[in-house]
Amino acid sequence: MKVEILVFGRLTELLGQSRFQLENVADTNAVSKVLSNQYPGLQQVNYQIAIDQVVVHGNRPLTNGMTVALMPPFSGG
Amino acid sequence: MDIYGSIDIKGIARYQRQITLKNFGVTGQRKLYKSKVLVIGAGGLGCPILQYLAAAGVGTLGIIDHDTVELNNLHRQILYTVADVGRLKADCAAEKLSQFNPDIEIISYPLALSNQNAPLILSKYDVIIDGSDNFPTRYMVNDACVLLQLPLIYGALSEYEGQVAVFNVADAKGTKANYRDIFPNPPQPGEVLNCAEAGVLGVLPGIIGTMQANEAIKLISGTGEPLINQMLIYNSLNNETYKINITATAEEESQLPLDLDAFLLTDYNWFCGIRTGADDVFEMSPGEFREIMFDDEYAIIDVRESGELPVASFDHIPMPLSELRKHIPPINKNKVVLFCHSGVRSHIAGELLHQAYPDKEFYSLKGGVLRLN
Image (cartoon, rainbow over all chains, first blue to last red; front, side, top):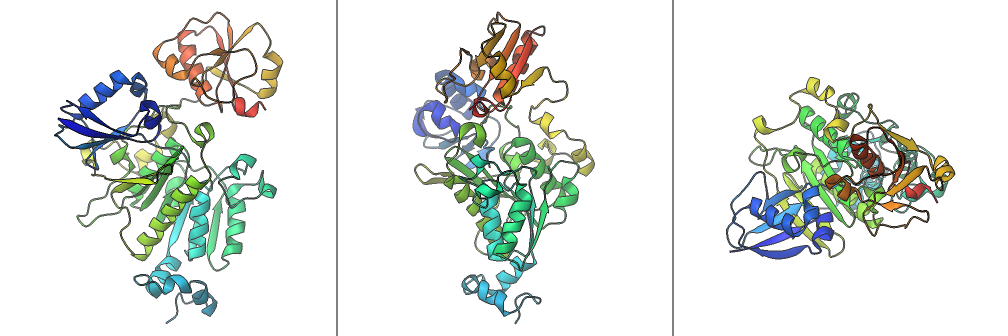
C-alpha cells in the first residue's frame, strides 16, 4: 500500500522534499511516526494533516493511493 | 440609477472598468461602497489589501496597527517611503489611502489590538481581514470573529509560501469553519519563525494580500466563489497551489471561548505559550552587549540553528534551540548571554535554561544579531 505525502512550509526544509511516496502506513499516526523516526526534527514541529484535501483531526485510517498533506501553521504577515 | 447616492458621476467614472464586468456591475459597486472592512495590520499583507480595497471603492476602511515604519519594512510594505520611517503605520497608511481615494472613509487605529478592545472595534465592521504577524493576534481575531459572527479573511506567510482562507461564512449547507478547525493548538514560541526571523521576499505578501483583497471583494459583492471553508496554500517557488477543505469541529470539542465574557478573560499570549510577567530572563541592549562581549565572566551562546546567517564575529558557543529543547547541556559560567536572529528564540532559550539553572543569570540580546550591526 502506498500513499502520497505532501509537505508545506518549513517541513519542506526539514524533510528536504515537498512530495514523495510512503509505503506500508496503515493510518495517519503511522505516517507521523515513520517520518519522525526518519527526521527527528519533525517532533518539534506542530502540523495538521489533510487526507485527500480534507483537514482531519486524530488518527485516521489510510488506503492505497490517498494523498496525505502535512501543513504547519504560518504566522507571517 | 445612482451608484451610491452621495457620490456624483466622478465616482461612476472611477469604477467604470469593474462596473462593466458581468456579475459585478452597479449592484456589486454599491455593495462595496456600503461595506465596512477592518484590516488588522498595515504591514506586508495589510498594504496591498488596503490599497486594492481603497482603489476598488470599499466605503469604509479601518486600519489597526500600533507599529511604526522601519527601513527594513519598505521592500514589502509598499505604501511607505523612506520619509515615512518612524511614523505610525496606521496614520501614514490612512493619509496615503485618502489621497488614492478621497471618496471613501478611512479610520485609523494606531493602537495594539487586544481582547479588551477587539469586540468594540470589530463589531463596527462587516468584514475583518487578518494581516497580522503573530499567533496570539491570529487566535484572538479568529475567536472574536466567531463570537461576533463576522466574516474573517485570513492570510499568512512562511518564507516562500502563503495561506489564504475565508472563515466564519456559512456554506450552502450552513456550515461555518474557522481557524481553530484547522489549527486547534498553537505552536510553541520560536517553533514557527515570523518574517523578521525567517525572511520573506517582498512579492509574496503582495500576492497573498492581493488574494485576500480579492476574496473580500468577491464576498462583499457576491461574485464568484470565495474560499469559504477552504484554505488555499500558495508556493511562490514553483507556483503550485493546494486547496484543502475544512470541516467545522463539533461545538463540544472546540476550544473557543464560550462567549464574549470568556473571551475577555482569555490570555492569548499565555495560550500561545508566551510567558510574560514572571520573567527570569533579562533583556540586554546591543550597547550593553558590546561592553561585555569580551568579558570572561560571561558565556555567550548562539541559539540559532546551524547555518543561519550572519555568522557572529565574536567568540560564542553554538547551542541551537531545537537541541536545547531535547537536552540541557552543562554551562560553566554564572552569567550567560543568549542571542539569535531577532531576540525571540534567545528569550525562550533563556527561560528553558533558567529552569535548569535557577541560580545563574540569563540575558537575551535584545533585537538579536540583526541589531548589532
